[in-house]
Image 1 (cartoon, rainbow, N blue to C red):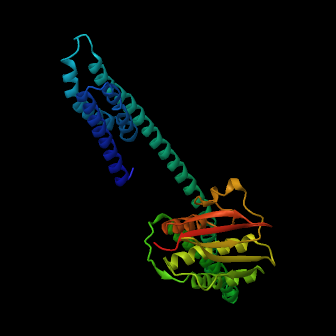
Image 2: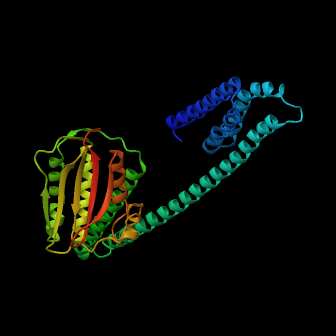
Image 3: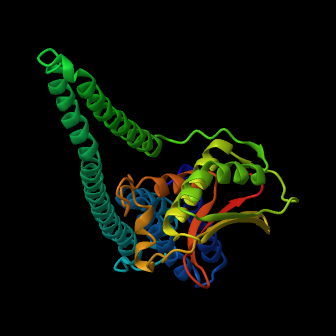
Length: 348
């Protein structure tokens, strides 16, 4: 519960108590019998306080209501037979209902936090397991090839004539070590990008320029897979307040996914347009699509179908888009494949 919402709820409960007290006293003094009905309305803010603030809030609200209700109870007590205990019963009911609702609410909150904690621990366990699995392969390669290089280099002193051959073989192995080390560095960078809070450096940017830069960056990968990339960006789009580097990271990730999902000779399309107060960016592929049941799961960290992927690309993209007060969703294409749609406000 954020501070604004909490203050609003407190003020609403107090306002309901004040209004109920006013009508209760007013009808009592004017002789109307509606004061009994207005007295029962005290249960409404009492129940709200219990649901919103738990046992402490419910007991505090019942105490405030009792303090407001007590003077009229004394007035009522002077004009009725002593055996009529209705006002006393109502005060007892205030505290009884407050206690019941408060206890139930606190119990529900404890169960909710336990479930959240259990789910967080389970997600952490899955993340650690996936990260360890992804890191195991390059670490094995690094360790194994380094040991081979050390063993080969040790043979140079024994057989000088084979030194060039041994050195050449060692260079090949070291090249693999360097490649796998770079892969590990990339994985660690993605993990840090995902775990760190985003600090956006926003400025007014031309989304067409960012799209063009992203398309140019993935151009060699698209050419290697014989996939065409087309861009559809009108020239009259207004400037949008975004973090250019972060957004380019998002588009490059989505474009690379689209390229890898498409078969040779297919086309990947990136289109942008304004729709009311929002800017829409669509990245469409011609792949086999994504099952509906998997569309929420793919935004979870370390969920990937790629042999060398960390499963953090889409979670990071989602995190960046949401940091811009936007959203990302998956749409089906008419023929084949899917469209990743980014929707962000044109003004912030």
